[in-house]
Image (cartoon, rainbow, N blue to C red; front, side, top):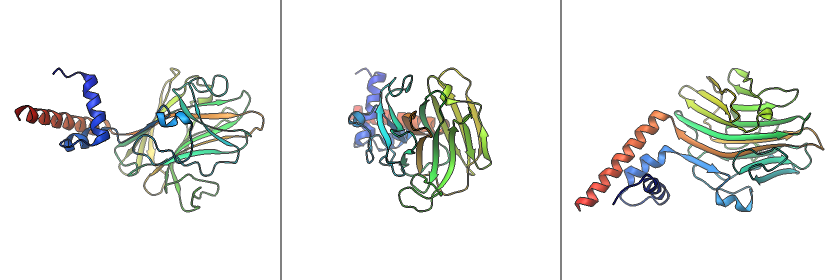
Length: 287
């Protein structure tokens, strides 16, 4: 029977989902090529976005602890939200009905984020003209979001920020990256981008990282390498939105998050998976 690429990738999905007998080598190689993934387009979110939902793979349930009483967590279609708001695919949306409270969402990372892995997310934001807002994407150690005073929002225990990508949109301040050397200006402004942005963060040995910010409006990408902030193993990703105006709102949109090995490791794993699949198919034919 002729093998098509469509059938090939359906076999990948089926094997990863079911752990089919006789495919251990295939499963361990191919399924590892993407260690974690979730998207707001998953059918689980057809009914909305709420704490405790756990679609996708490789992440823990969504945690909204530390959000204000008027915080909004919603599913936003493309073009939804405020006028010219979400320009991504369907997205998770963070906001506030009062406009002056923090809205948080985060998830644990199963097995932690290790050296050689890249975590990626696609984001967009909206602020009313002449209005100030804040968005933060940060990688934490301690398994929860960080509240005021630097304590965990869930337990009140020890938690630390290892790396942050953020924009305090007060007076046209650009996106900054907070790492072990301080805060660095990227020269990019997400509030002026019409189409959102992709963030790719690779963790390197020795508590180092690489980050690339790629705007979807055609603006040049920004890349930087540096040291992580001091702390324990990265095991949590947190998203935060805040606005400082009662009548106007800012909104923060996230359409997907994923974790993959660095490219050379992924290529080796895929190669191993292809070899394993070929071997299984040959044995079945001989039988």
